Length: 346
Image (cartoon, rainbow, N blue to C red; front, side):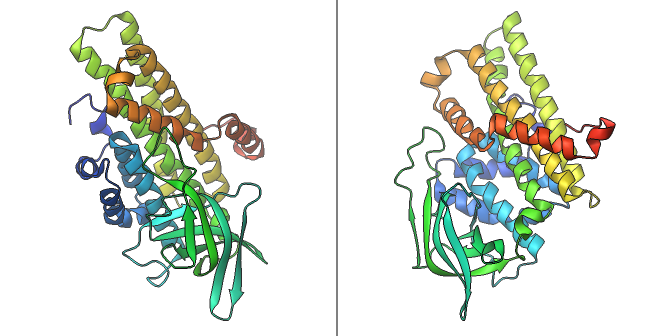
């Protein structure tokens, strides 16, 4: 991989994973195998967190569809490790999704029966339900919300991805999953999924993917500068991307250190995640705009890799809820002890 592809890759990327990811581009089965191979790394969240964030940033720089497949699998493996789940709940050969969307109107309930816990109803916004073997699913019980491990290949499970017609992340089919009394395994007690410090860590992992894609996108400016002497405006575009990406990378490294610090509380993790996601999302959106201004329409009409990266990243970034997440961040700062001292990590 050349010095300029992507931006400053040697300072944050994982060359071994980059090689593996290159083999998975445009091939879902290969991406699923890569997810399974990288799965044990998920348990490093909270201990060797930078190794996870670096891996995800690397995947984001190579192919966002592959990253979109591997990231939830690593998140699920981290959650299962935090819950102390055994092989009966977490088969080592499984490839996982995390289905936690809860839009208004969601009707999914989990009930205890003589045979065990059974899941009934529909879960929306589920990625690759027709490809994955298992998923961690949030559902309502008579005692409150809880997390369960569900087998997706069970005859009682069906999915519908027919409405998925995106311009970006086309290979990562997304739709609704229907459970008809599916036998599932509880993961943690009632309320544990949202209350654990690790809940916020998954959001930071997604931000690492955004960063990797933005860095790769910015690399196109350096390649253009090698092909033609940059003028003052081109240098300004390069400088803008450089300071944006450097700031995002510095914050991601700081976040990894904070996550590894066992003294970091759940509320502190939540505030950290909100700040990191907001910063990296802003960097990625600014990079999309700057690269578009700098390169014009050419690569959007003749460079399939560039066009795919732009489309994929634009859709992926919508996992951040923009102004609503910033308003939520503002409310969190008011509630945080840091606000009284003026301290800020992001």
